[in-house]
Image 1 (cartoon, rainbow, N blue to C red):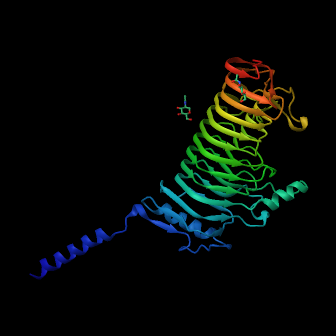
Image 2 (tube, rainbow, N blue to C red):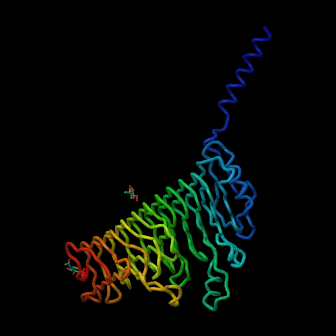
Image 3 (cartoon, rainbow, N blue to C red):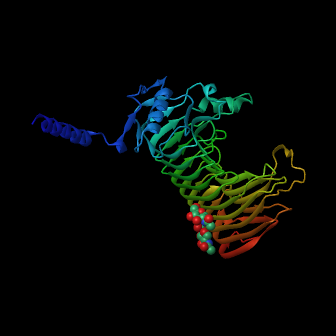
Length: 394
Ligand SMILES: *[C@@H]1O[C@H](CO)[C@@H](O)[C@H](O)[C@H]1NC(C)=O
Ligand SMILES: *[C@@H]1O[C@H](CO)[C@@H](O)[C@H](O)[C@H]1NC(C)=O
């Protein structure tokens, strides 16, 4: 009877081992357990990268956990090369800080970068790039590093950024470049109104990006949209200070992908330089902008609430015919109210060579110091419906 007994025993062990096997779906890689220090002074990059490597190898839905505290990260590149996992979550209860010496990351473009990843979510967390010394350098003269983007996703898909806060970025706060299916929500971005080039969120060459419930105070565009962007949805945004929501600058290059199917709605702009802007270089290009819907916005003391500027040519250099080749069509402005800080509240300054067409304005009511504002049109064609104040020049 020896054999059956030991057989039963090993069966029992086997069952226990199944029951007690940790669920692969719940693996947590705590960066502190991997050596990260929450003192804000010790470089913790290696622990973060080790957590990433482990999560990439795991077969479940791993979480990389960052407990409360301040973690110094020098350059951190999370690469999708050799990463089999497509469901990695960063849950961040702490603050990630960049080196206080801006030169460490000032010339390497990105502070934290995800490249060619699939299925990464970032939940919570504060990014503090400590950019103020670089801004001060830039205000004194031209011999400063360009500065790094705080967080970039490049050539990635199925990305979620939720509840993240970005402060004191050296340059752009968040860049989405060459991506598909990106969902940004509940994000907060804060830099001073005079901090140079600190765009809030820059989306370029990407499709299927949504940005919702996000508050952006910054020194440059709240949201800027580059060539090759399509199916972009922007909703419930608070913008200001800043330069507004901007498509462009486009048409810098002759051969350039267009921008199409962009909706921006339920936006409040406060004391911004622009509200909804489309901006192109005054030079030849095969680019285009079409199928854009700007709707349900409140403008509070905005310099240029509605503006298309196709005559961008800084220093008047490299713009031979002073006309933009970018064709702008099918653009609607609906339910937009509030106050302009300048008399020209609506300005369509389009290309002489490729006039704007299909601009639709409906229920727009903008005033200037309790008086009527003005609108100004050049090479712009379209129609107006309902209340349109200032009266349309289309
Ligand atoms: C436009 O983009 C939205 C997402 O922002 C998408 O749902 C819709 O299908 C797109 N429309 C077309 C015609 O591609
Ligand atoms: C436009 O807005 C102003 C200020 O809110 C308001 O007094 C005025 O009645 C509005 N005009 C129209 C035609 O709705």
